[in-house]
Image 1 (cartoon, rainbow, N blue to C red):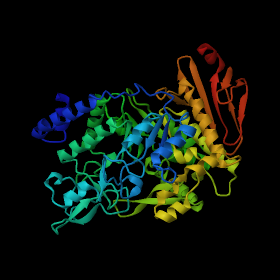
Image 2: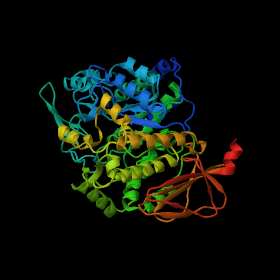
Image 3: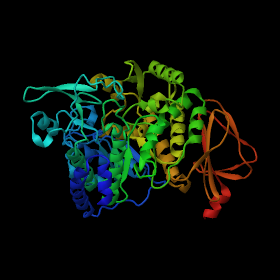
Image 4: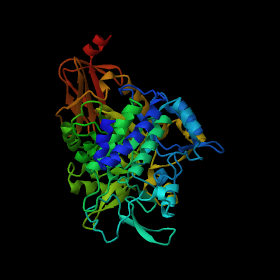
Length: 566
């Protein structure tokens, strides 16, 4: 109780902290009584599938039931953890404008279907903690003057100077809303006029959101993703992102899940420059268990686009692994676009803009953010990762080679890797989806009829099947090798610019992971010794250089280390 009061006192007055702490503790004890079982520690077998719950569809069948059929047949042996993007009732943004935090979208199913899915996979839930739908009961009751929801959202005089507020979108910070009384007020809306920011300066908001968080644990969430978490606390005259109070809330969330269900993982989603992103690991105090490795997608894309891994290698060389129970959540593609802010300061702005221009010419879409001076800058590239890496004129053979070597990089670095479902399915840009919704991000959010996607995965000589088989094989190689444990450090090995080469070592064992990110044939000199290519089980003698064709990679383990394991 003392630690909880201390934490709350950094957010509110002492009297509020003293009265709120017993209520939170009682709620935590309710969850503790359920004795929820979690995996004690992540390891090399933890590979996450990112997906929407309604991705696979059948007529008159709830989406989660259809998803489980697909998962059990094609994905279960590969992915131990399934990250379901928001599966609650929503009004916009493909689920991120939540109407009711504690209900399952009836089109997808109900909580019984979620628990049924839990029998096949460990689950990761989205906690959309910064904002909720303008169509939600909470906001409607707020507009109606319900005292229970007074001050639940951030009211602001429209004359307030908010020029220093960080803007992730090219939309106004404040949106006018008319109350049932007829009065009009301006409300803080970071992302859209349908996504109303919650007011965590009100302790009742914090309590209700803690209740939601613990409810998710009770419903099977072993991983919890804190969506848009950096924006939770607002102070006019500041950037209103990454404020001390926001960090304090994340620390509180971690404290509570560690008490309620040890082993639960808190992941912060902060699509921002690297130093701001890793700040959510905390400084001396425990904060997030994992943070998204946001620089990785644009760095790998840039490296393959130019056939030059220099920026990627330089970044990886400086990357420090966090100590304690903290690690990176690594990914290349997600339901959102490829964020550009995380590589500002790593890749020169001129090269970022040139990359954007090149991808636009190949059919990618671009979303923009508002800068404090009123100008706009590209915020993310909206494209499937398959099409981001390739030109429209490329052959499927080239597409596949680039795509697989990109994922070999993903799977080789320290942390827990995650694969977006559209990637394992080898999906291309969904232009029809964009035309239907008018939203750039729909380009990478295609839905499938279960029968059709199953047929495609069984068909011969298709890019989709080849991608599925290649990534499945690669992931299972990674899962079988203990040197890919998330906490085993990497050393970047100097090489020619075309190559990304790292070493993962533990005791006498080591892996040399060599990736040719160019279309050129490249030689690499090995130290003397005998190596096993763990992807092919072939033997390589390290007295001479090895030759890698364009976009080829080689994962090598010294033979004597393998024999010692036996």
